[in-house]
Length: 467
Ligand SMILES: NC(=O)C1=CN([C@@H]2O[C@H](COP(=O)(O)OP(=O)(O)OC[C@H]3O[C@@H](n4cnc5c(N)ncnc54)[C@H](O)[C@@H]3O)[C@@H](O)[C@H]2O)C=CC1
Ligand SMILES: O=C(O)[C@H]1O[C@H](OP(=O)(O)OP(=O)(O)OC[C@H]2O[C@@H](n3ccc(=O)[nH]c3=O)[C@H](O)[C@@H]2O)[C@H](O)[C@@H](O)[C@@H]1O
Image (cartoon, rainbow, N blue to C red):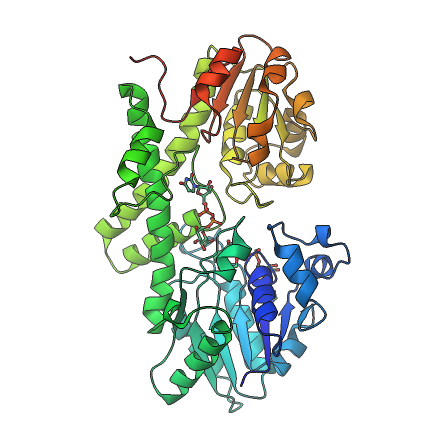
C-alpha cells in the first residue's frame, strides 16, 4: 500500500492532478514540489483566488485537501526521500537550441529530475511519467536511474494526462480513461497495480487501461495529434466555406451528427493555441523523421502549417477589411487566453494576431478577464520580433470592455469567454468609429443580430457576400 506520493512540477498538470488524487485518497500524503518558490507560495496562499493557475472548481478541491493530505513545498529532496511513488510533471517544451531546435521536445528538465531522484533515493521507488514525452523516453530514464549503483530499484510507469485546461477538474473527476503503461514482469505488474489502485478510488475500473510503456507514451502524442488535426480540418473547411457561401457552423453540425465523426472538437476558430498541441505534433514529426518516416512526418506537419495559416489569415482579414491600413487605428481585442476559463496564454492565437497587426502599426487594446498586462507583454516579448518599448507603446490593456471598445475601428474576438456574449453590443456599437467592424474569431456571436445593430460582422467560415 502506497502511503506517500510526491509530484515534481506544480504547474497546470501537477497542481490540479495531485489535488484531485489527494482529495480522493485521504489516506495518502501527496506532496507537490517545484523549484519555483513563487509558484509554491501561491499554491500555499490563504487567499484561494491567488492560486497560481485559474481553473473552475480548483479552489474548492484545494480548500478541502490542502493541509490535510495535500502539501506544496520547494523541498524536492525531502519529498523524494519520503515517497514510494514519484510523479514527474515538469515542462517538456519544444527545444529552442541545438539538435532538433524548433521541433524536438526539450527533455533537460525531465533528465534533471531523474538525476535528482537517482541521487537522493535510498529506498525503492515507482517513478511515474506524467509529463508528455517522446515515445521511448522511459528507456533513457531507466538508464539514468539504474546507473547510480546504490542498489535502489526503480519501476518506471507512463501515465499521461489527458485533462484540458478550463475543464481540468471535471476532466480529472470523470476522465474518459486513465492510461497506465508499465512492465509486464512481476515487479512491473505490482507497480502498475499500485497506481491503478490510486485511481480506483474514484475512477471505474473499466476506464483504467494498462498497456506497455511505449504504447502509453505514444498514445498521448497520438491523442493530441488527432485532436489538433480535427481543428485544422474544420479550419481548412472554414476558408472553403467563405469562398463558396457555405456556413462552417452548418457544415460542422451536419458532419458531426454522423456518429463515426462525432460532434466534438469541430469548432472553427482563429486557430488552436495552448502549450501542447503544437509542441506535441512538432515532437511527433521530429520522431517520425528521425526514423526516416518522411511521409508520416509531412502528414502531421500539415496540421501545424494549417494552423499557422489560419492565424495569419485572420490578421490579414482584419487588415484588408479595414481598407488595407490599420496604422494608428484602435483595434480592440476581446480575450488573450488560448481558450476560455483559463489564464494560460501559451501559444495563444491572440499573440500572433497582435504581432501581425503591430507590424502594421495598429494600436491594440486588450481585455481578458483572467490575463494580466505583464503576461501579454511577456508573450509578445518572447517572440523577439520587436523591442519592449514598442510592445508597450502598441498594446494598451483595459479592465473594462466598454472603455476598451470606445472609439475602436474594429473589435476582434480572440477567446470565447462566455461573458462576451452577454455584453450590451448596441452600446458598444454606438461608441465605436464607423463603419464598426467586428471580427468574431470564435463564432460566438449571432452575426445577423450584430448586423442588425449596425456592425460589419465577419465570422470564421461564414460568407456574407455570396448568395
Ligand atoms: N497544460 C496542460 O494542460 C497539459 C500538459 N501536459 C504535459 O504535462 C507536462 C507539464 O505541463 P504543465 O503543467 O502545463 O507545465 P508547467 O510549466 O505549468 O509546470 C511545470 C513545472 O515544473 C517545474 N519544474 C521544472 N523542472 C523542475 C525540477 N527539476 N524540479 C522541480 N520542479 C521543476 C517548473 O518550475 C514548473 O512550475 C508537460 O509535459 C505537458 O506537455 C499534459 C496534459 C495537459
Ligand atoms: O496535452 C495537453 O496539454 C492537453 O491538450 C488539449 O487540451 P488544451 O490544450 O488544454 O485545450 P483544448 O480544449 O484541447 O483546446 C486547444 C485549442 O484548440 C482550440 N479549439 C478546440 C476545439 C475546437 O473545436 N476548436 C478549437 O479551435 C481551443 O480554442 C484551444 O486554443 C487536449 O484537449 C487535452 O486532452 C490534452 O491533455
